[in-house]
Length: 162
Image (tube, rainbow, N blue to C red; front, side, top):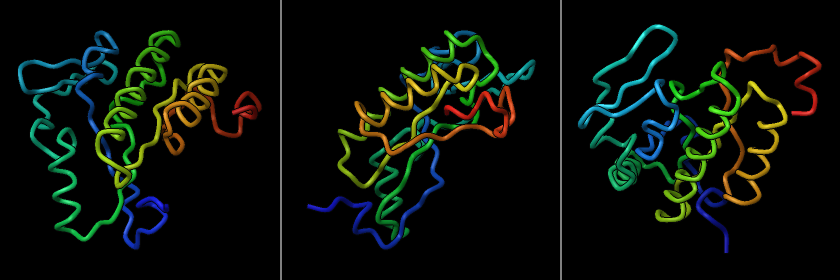
């Protein structure tokens, strides 16, 4: 039986998701104060982002808004504030595993209308390859989404295996 992505006529491929399970998973780079998440990017701390009770965090609301807009399927990708490509590799690997596991659970609970893209620890190409393989083969995510500000250029020979 075909899934929603295979039969959809309108697919939103640029939809970010914010997963409560990831708050605090990157240590001092993000957390949750009451109902307001915060993120640290370099020396800048972004406070008071209103993700709670929005389609970013509430999948039922997301599906309702998709219905209202005539969107058949949506591909969820990591919030760009969580592209933590310059933190220590072990910390990034743990964060990405947490993010991708939580995203896979969300997708399992909500049928096949949302699909997901993994977060990857791009500061370690072997770790990125391993996590992408796990995300696609074990978690049923559709691929990955990476940032544009990476530790090395995309044409760097060190990226070839990726």
